[in-house]
Length: 200
Image (cartoon, rainbow, N blue to C red; front, side, top):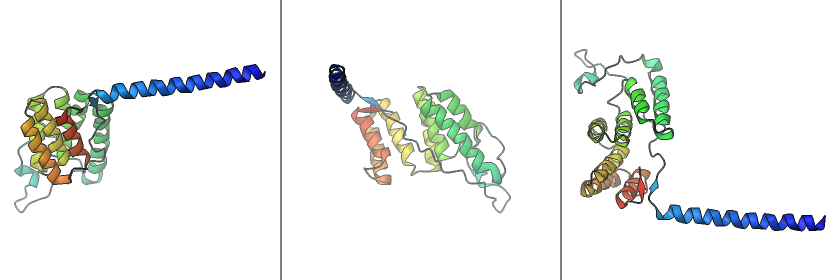
């Protein structure tokens, strides 16, 4: 019985050492290679604002360039809830399942192409699909909606870096710094992408 107990204790020591050694080897391998980072996008976007009526009876949305796909706006009582439900579905498809085509389809079906959060996420998914021209259009659209959208500038900088335009990516990094400082995720992620230590 004592021999069995001593054998078990020695086995547990060996297993602890083996596990620690395996963890150390894995850490050293991962530390030396560029990493694929976790999602940066917020999972709580700013809900779209309902259209406001001007004096001539047109809505403020009429002044913007028409969206490629126009969907009737839902009534005000359900629009925020529907938007957030669709957003979370698209977010999960894009970031959790790498289903960029499915995520884009869900985002486009919301009918809020001019929302900065929607346009940025469509741009990100387009970039991940290698559709760089589409990504650029969506990032530009997001910045038209919100010129100080830090995440858009960060992803746009990554777009520039992937195109080989590191100088423009650094300009975008400076824009992100001016919006949210050097400690925000948008800044640190773009800096890491420019340095080549992380890919998004």
